[in-house]
Amino acid sequence: MDRRDSLRKILWASGTVLTLPAWAHGWQIDDVAGFSNSFSTSQSDLLSSVVDTIIPSSTDGVGGLSVGVDEFLKKLLEQCYEKEVNENVKLQLDKLEDKAKGIYGRSFEACLPVERASLLLAFEASEDEAENSFFNLMKRETIRGFRTSRQVMTRYHKYRVAPGFYDGCKNVEVQ
Image 1 (cartoon, rainbow, N blue to C red):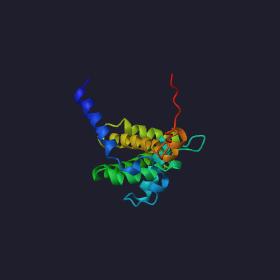
Image 2: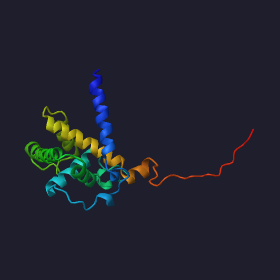
Image 3: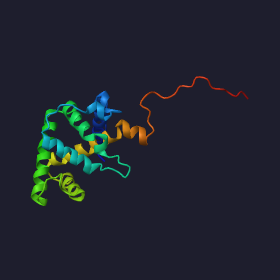
Image 4: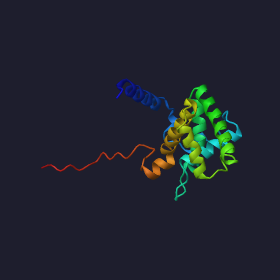
């Protein structure tokens, strides 16, 4: 076990959580909708397909797209990540589209969910550091965006966005 490497990862992860803006916790679709970003239309559509592949809609209709995680990711990448990371995401989205067309003969969006998953898992297993970091970033931030959305927090975690109740009058039994 490499303690320094483990400590570095823990510090990096905690630093990332601390640097997130206020809107990134308990956000809702209205907070991120209409945000202008530098993603092209095809890259935005591709990003939506990646989100739908990572967190598809469940039987009750809640999924990454219905919550608006794709819009969350666009705003997060534009406002919270360095330009190099943002450019790598765009480059890897284009590579993902090219690989889908090369392997399956159709766009990533038109692929079946199993085919999409296999393409993304190929990025995870890739020796190319840029592809690997792209997959890890997309997976991590998609899950974070889903879990921190107001809709998911209030539905599944019983989280109250406003502060909880304060009941200052309690009867105390004296023995």
